[in-house]
Length: 322
Image 1 (tube, rainbow, N blue to C red):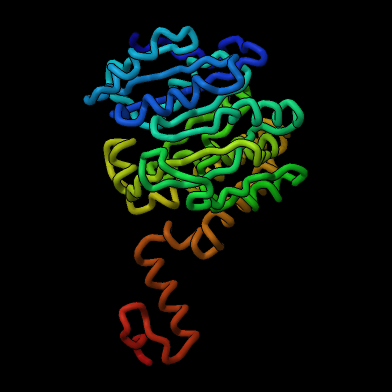
Image 2: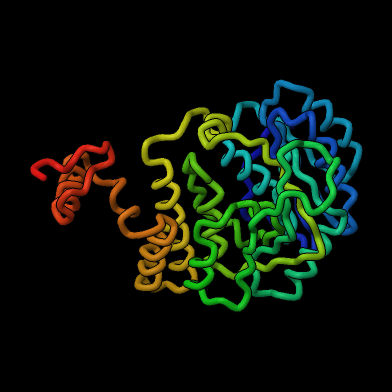
């Protein structure tokens, strides 16, 4: 099946959980990932599997699961970027709740059941996630705990600013948690080449709290790719000079837009933009300095060193005139 027109306003089926699995050349681990979804204790699910022009045996693995009526398969006619592919599987989803799944991750059989119950108990929450572990090799010969993953993203009971501050600079593994689909539908889909999932997570955080449940488990396979490798795979090009700053800027834009949509007043929207940008950049200096032209940077350094006689610059030489 090829791509179809996006359906961002598709009717929602209450209680149904849609799982979107964008795949590119994931044949080696795809079967195991699909089995961990299809053997969930919560059975009211649909699995949207999209093959992004794979050149390995991904298509054969997908066809082996096509007999399951819960599985809907697509094959792209042209290669999509990572963000476009994640968006595509979301737009095909029909459930009230949605979850992205990678082709090489694993979930405990009760993963969806536990997180769905948590969201139903907490109607104000927009995302639920579980205990998470990281594994460098894509095999299931593991025993919990593997390498612990720092993923304390529970923000229940916190104000908007407190939620954003806690989540600033956290990892993005909880992008694979269970999410209320209506919270995703109006996302503007920013596409920074570094950490494109961060603006999306901040968009969700501006809409409501995240909750964490320890009764389920998630295993994240970490192949150890560099940020540059990930950018090339997902976007076809590497990172630019201001890649990190673009991600931070887009994250602040996402939060500001979500805040404006909820409150329709510009002061809170502007406030959360400035604060999140500074928090994500780890300080005001880091927020401003990378955007400066070269002449302004030289002036900045000259003024800085003039205040501290005898201090050397990064190259080890003394500041001129000292």
